[in-house]
Length: 319
Image (cartoon, rainbow, N blue to C red; front, side, top):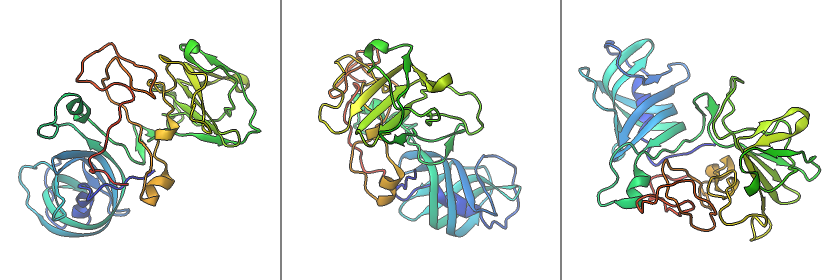
C-alpha cells in the first residue's frame, strides 16, 4: 500500500544529499541517502506545524542550494517553496550539516505522520487527545514486519476448520471458519521469528459474502486455529453481524469489523478512498457509539473518544 502526502516534507531531504560535494562534518543524525539507489531515509522532519518521521523516498530531481555546516538545526520543509533544510545527513560515508535543497520530483515509499506536539490552536477536549501523538503508517516495513493488516480471499469451496477461542468465546461467533492453514497474520516478522502483537487474521469468502476475523490467532496442528475471539460479518446484509449483541467485542475491540476500514493499494493508487478509515488511539472512554458494540476502557473522562466515534480528516492527507 502506498500513501502520497500533500507536498510531503521529507522527500527533499533525499535530494539534498544525492550529490553533495562539500567537506564532511562530524556525524550527528540518522538521516541518510543511498547514492546508488537514491533511497532517502529520514528520521523526522517538520512541515507546517506537523512532524513526519520514518520517511523513505526515491529522489528523482532536486537542486542543491548549499551546505552551511555548523550546529545541526531541526529538519524542516517549506511546502510553499519546496525548500528542505536538513540538520544532518549521511552520504557516501560522510555526514553533512545544515543542507539546503529544493526537491522537484520524488516518489514517497513510506512515512509516518507524528502528532508529537501541540494540537491546533483552539482545539480542546476529545479532539486534542486525538491529535496528540497521532501517526499514520504507509507502505513498507515497521519493526521488522510489513505495515498494515493482511487478509486472505477464499472461494466458497475453502474447507472450514475448527476454531478454539481462549478469552472471549462467549462473545464470539462459533466456528468453523474457512481459514487456510497459511492465512497471513498481522505482525508476522519477515525473519520468520516468533512475534506477538494483535495477530489479526482476516478471511473473506467471496462466494458466500462473509467476512471472518480473529484476534490473537495462532495456527494449530491439523489446520485448526486458536484465537482470543472471532466474529463473522455478513457483507450482503445491513444486519452485518446477526449473531452479535450489544456489549460484545470482536477481533476489533470496538466490536466492529476491521476489513471495511482498511485502505487497499488499488484504492490509494486510484486517487480516491470512498469509505471510512479505521484508526486506533492510545486512550479511549468507557463508552461506545453504534455501530460499535464494545468499549475497552475504565476511564469515563468526556475528553476521551468513545469507541466507534466518527472523525473527519482535515485535509492534511490526500490519497
